[in-house]
Structure formats: C-alpha cells, structure tokens
Length: 155
Image (cartoon, rainbow, N blue to C red):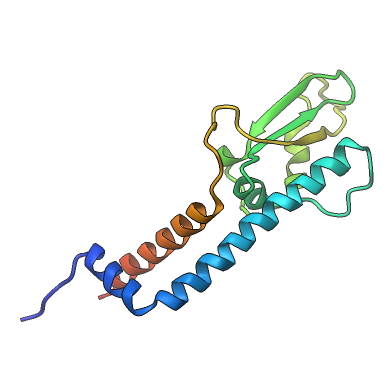
C-alpha cells in the first residue's frame, strides 16, 4: 500500500531539504526584478530625451518592472493610446518594439505611419508599494509548486 503526500506537505518537505537552493533561486529572481526595473527606467529616460535607443525591453521585463502600460502616439494625427501588456497574447520574450505594427493608427488607414512609442508606465490602479523580496519569494514558490504538480501528474 502506498502513501501519498498532499502538495503542501511535499512543498514543506522539499523546502526543508533544499533551503540553500531556494535561497539561491530567490536571489537570482531578485536580481532579475531589479535589472528589469533598471532596464525599463533607462529605456524610458532615453526615449523621453529623444536619444537613440540601443535596446528595447521585452514584454516580460516590462511586466516584472511593474510598468505594463505601453503608451504610444500616431505621428500623423497625434492620437494617443496605451495598451496593457499583460492582456496581450504575445510571447513574453518579444520586444515591445515588435508591437509597433499592430499599434499603428486605424484612423489613418490605408497609409498609416507606424506608431511612435512614448514610454512604459505603471498601472494607475496598482497602488501597492513594491517589495522585491516578497515578489521573488512568490515567483520561486509558484514555480516550485508547478514543478511538484507536474511530478505528481507524471506519477
């Protein structure tokens, strides 16, 4: 007769055994969160100053940096808009500049110019203060829980 553990028991047992590995993963995720925030900040500042853009953040980096709202403007008619990157069905590793053709103005059809990106910003409805340590912990725990569920399903 075999005994089964609940997912929570398995997670606790796994956490006890792999504390060093979990701490290492959380530190790596914290670094990624900080880097994503710094990349978006640099990109926004270069864009605002009209400087050359040497890179473009990915959709995932913008979301991790808590700046999921991409603002843009039509150069022809000056209509502005914004899109929530969390609601798009695009690969998270896609560059935000890859969205430009789909953001082009529908009013200026058939010869609409490409939309001009004006920056990434946070969601105005998200008023929580950012806690990178908690976010890293939550991301690692979610990934570990998903791994445990996959292992359970394969058994």
